[in-house]
Image (cartoon, rainbow, N blue to C red):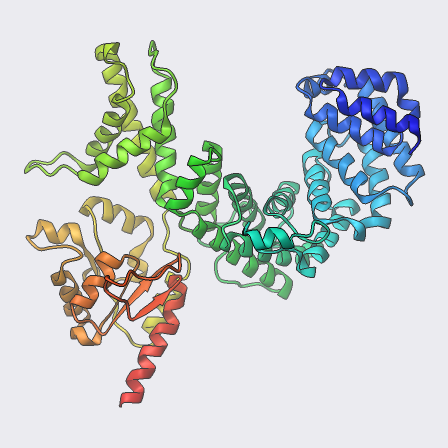
Length: 563
């Protein structure tokens, strides 16, 4: 790099506007090297007026000149150009939005150079290059995409995925030459999904998908992804694992694959998706919201992906969508000068009211949906100036109704049994066990949810599903009352000491299961935390319902040993 090219690069780096960068291009492009071209494109892409100049009808002649110069330099110096320069060019062009046709010569030149240097790309360069290809609209069957995919697969297989937990020890050990960040993994997944690749027909990308999905699973389990990365990764897994005409419950269901590569890719996709969905807990949503990283589009992508893949995500997804709908309805009211809605406050106010009275406790109760819509409206009203009058009050009521409609529709559309539940039920029946489901909550709400997950397929006998709200209507009690557990034993035709209860709540499931003197109390504890010493202690703890089959086998093994 000559002294003049160093000077040019300094001038480019100091330019804040694309017009300033293009002025340098007009004067000095003949003196540019590959680094100057990459710096110029990157500065234009970041400038506030960059995309406007590129979007001009017919394009900008100076941008075209810059792209042609870069293509010529890469082509002429293909053996000596560096991987970071190739990645920078692709990333900048993608960010700038020039399109694959405008950058056709440059993409071809980069492709030829990548054939020589693919093994030299580090994880960040691979992520940037693939992301740039996706943004440019490069075809998925081009050699450039295959080369980058092979290099990414090899990099991930070398053990550079890391957990990405962000711990102090891991940060000390992080090596940018081999280690993948959560953002890098997420961007590669997003890029290949955008390019139109498919894990159902992985072809040349079979090894990449297996390594990529495994990396996503590890990072999701370690809590490494932020809101945007989680949303992008889940969306990508859904796109990669499910073809357009797949039904929700077939999309990543049991493998009926004809090839080992396809089956392996789908198994890895299933594990990655489950880990991502399981990571979106209530505390995760709360943390992302407090950190300012949670946007409505992230929530929408998470919810869409969970629905497409047939996975359960936290109820906060539905709550967040309801909050967004309520806020939008409020802001659209004609003549309201209340200003922007504080969504965090809106959700907090709604939750406070909901926790006290989730349904109308009066002798002549209001329908549960209307009651909860009114709670949303009351939460909204706390942010409306009292001078708005009757019109505003009516609009707030309508906004509350819209919020609850959004909540119900979104929740029921994406509600499914937890991953592994169907398999656990099938295993229990195969071992000769009688099964009963006990669910707490308002009778209508719970019946709607049971219908949404098609609970009758797992529990065909209507008597084997006990709804706590219906027991209350009959004068009985719901969980954590001991009586409802004993009723379950009666339906199953067994004594309490022959029964095991499985649940995710220490208070309503484990404690009362122990109190009812059941044989076993199994705590589903995704967080892996320990039960407080003063709480009832479960006899078994599993991280997910998928681990129930092993507990069943262990309990039946104990019975066999005793006899």
